[in-house]
Length: 580
Image 1: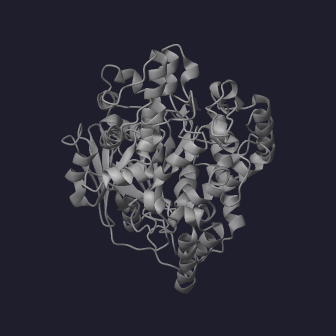
Image 2: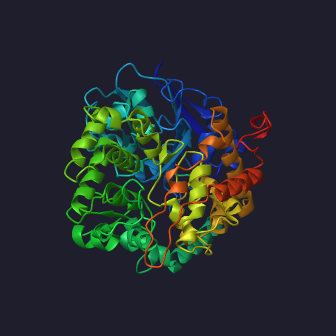
Image 3: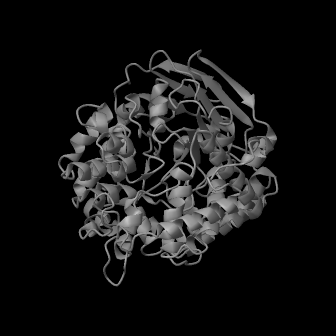
């Protein structure tokens, strides 16, 4: 078999058993890997409570991982989110994904719950479940240091151990399996960390064709101003978006009560580079190097969502405080988006946003579930409900919105609501065409045509997440080039259309899982604030409330395109039986 290894490793932490199984070839060809394969493997488990020992935590790489395909050293982790209740996948890059593939597997399927804290060590020759009592309670850097002799490490921090509903999983290289609380699922299994190592490389079916396709991708990267331009993400990282969002009057500020923050330039991409001596960094083998590290060696610097949410969303303009908050989240194992958004909701409810110097203590309280942290650890939706102000949770399906105010980009408004995992910008990423004007510009203040654009983009991104490739690649390359890479690697003929059809199957399967767990049209809605309150107009830009009537018209169109009923679900109860 080319590209894939064709094997899955199933580990039951309750019994301590581990065994390899063959993955049917048709599942690999029709779901690829990453998100798609993980979603398919969840078929018999999605109705379980996220903390049920039988709930799987699935780690899945793609057929291009382990090859020299650009940005393909990535994996997806799939389970059911304890924060949202939706099916949830998170993608992360780094050495860990490459090492997992080099251990000779396409997927790691973990179920059960250990009696005591353990770590899992994998190589092609050996599977060990080792005691980790001495690591329980340690932060992520200390955990990684304690296991680094075993290979590349992915670990949870105190937040995951304590069941914080938005706990993440971090790899030793600083990459985050960030959203939805999958770190809490891992903690509920008493699994502190996974260490992987290996030396196996996937075979490539057609080396000459693969090399040509790779050269095409690299040429397109270099020609892309979004990637390698003077203000591209390779130069300044994702915080280059700070100034752009300020100019567009769509920077979420004060828990989304306004859309402009006058001091945002303090933490823009250029400001971070100048103040922190930012140097290029990135995922294993990635030519873009969009991540940035501090010049003094103190670690990774925050991404756009993090600087914006610990900045404008909480009315904080101190860059050093924002950088410190990012470091703490990475050490404690907290999703930065939900952590910051929960603080902002709490701040608006109590009438005072946290001061910069308060945030580190509050983050520690969250991770340890002490004092106010017991409530903050629940995420903004549950916190706001308990405090009697549910309307002040800026979330969709309980997942806090990222740093693009939907009043400034109507495609983003729709995409937040149709996303299978809740308020997420990465399922369709209409910011690409509404703000960055790639591949073609669309009117950001119009819903016209957005239902079809979003459905196509969701299918495309589901395929990308299953390859598994980085979405930033597609600011330069397209599915056409990656279909060529995939065909050359696997020896199976793929076209852009076939990849989109695979993506559509994945998106609909996720929708079916959510509907079976009680989600429907009522959950595909923005918080009331966006329909009733304007944003911060200025500089010739008017930010109006979103028309609920027009939004719902476009949502109806989306449902029709997807073949759903008016509730956003399926009339055909045998939908899954018709899938591969």
